[in-house]
Image (cartoon, rainbow, N blue to C red; front, top):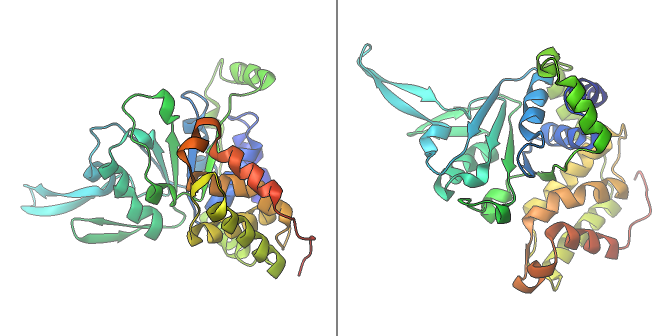
Length: 310
């Protein structure tokens, strides 16, 4: 299984991030995107660079600020006086792994320039459409809005394009000590090697879609989704897109764990990361609760079906 190799290789640079690497792998296999959230300096950018290096993919980074324009993201047609004609200059979105750094510092207009490429894996530049090569994944980072000046919260339509929202916590004491030792004399990122080819990755992506989802598991997913629409503390529940996202994430988790079928445990392990960023709490609830906390409580209230392969 390439995920174990991926953990071992990225582990040369990132210590104690096996769970985050699993979630990244799930998004990659299912053609989804990931939103990382944490304070600056916790390794989000380094994780993205390491991930791209290990899957033998091209990597681009956009550092979002309020003055970044949509054309800085997608690309432009420019006039080449030497050739006396307009030429297409694709933007950084034309890549395999795109790091959208501090995406919530971009204006809503610039944020929306990523909607097409995230949903349809293509980019339209002044009327000309370019299809992107597989794999394509957006890894966006976001600092907590409440602690930052000059940020623009992502709208619901943008958040809904992310398969997973993954918080990055501070490292544990010994993990941070190990980081100090590894980076004392050299940059470990330079020593990373690919663990899977694009062809092998495409094969894995086809296999993960064959992971069996029983009728009981489908019902369990729908119960969770419907509960978000009926919960008294949730103002806006999740859409049908979220139902599909939860199923796909659970398939990915089963595949990562080496199984050919989804269990209720796969749903419980992924639901918080798939659904938390897709709900909106009531004004009263938002004063004392978090989206993640509400989702954990909601999931515990629903009866778990008996695990079965069929």
